[in-house]
Length: 325
Image (cartoon, rainbow, N blue to C red; front, side):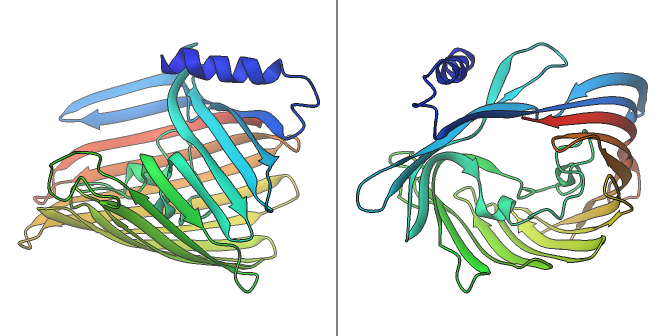
């Protein structure tokens, strides 16, 4: 049902008259990677070449002017897999909302304010096996959440730099304590952004008792940029502290070199050590055009238990082509 309805939305939008399409955009990204993945889990080792689609997407977005200075905004975005030919798959951000002098409010499915608070610090966002979510979660929720049934408010920019993000998610489970109210789960963020500096503080508090607090910062000067994320997460039995450090250097108008380290350590609420993760990634992007980028990267990941035994590890070398339209 999801696949058919999503396809119908895209096809119908593409057939609309030009006048009706004035404020509607059909867009997407093709993100294809040719990778060698050497992986060991539970004593089993696998070494193979793969063609992978990572967060390729197709969507429709737009707006419409309303009375009283308001504007209707909407987006319907779905993941696609050109590598497997699987067609349109799972939902990404899908919403309808209102925008005006008050800011904007949307209802539907969307990344939480805490997830959005990472800004552009993750230098390998949506790269196969190199996204920060690979290493942020040895025991508890990693904070990289896209949730359904969300009501999300974003303030207008304050003092040309500050935005407030507030979201709540009703539990929708009648008669279930702490999961049947209007705001059983919440996510909030405060962001500060100028040309050279980005700062954010955010917090998730979910009805299942998953809680995450995230601090993020990025500084850019000329061709250089450095960024960091520090976060602490906990659930009913475990807590995790995680860090991200990233950097980039624009060697030319076309070449961008970048590196990133992600680490996470979990322990029980009683103080017993849990799993540790470490991921190191290096790479280079080459802009072939305004909307097309060729990429090369290498990422190495290891997860150890409290006794120092490796329980999961992989090395991935990848070449990719990313085209936006």
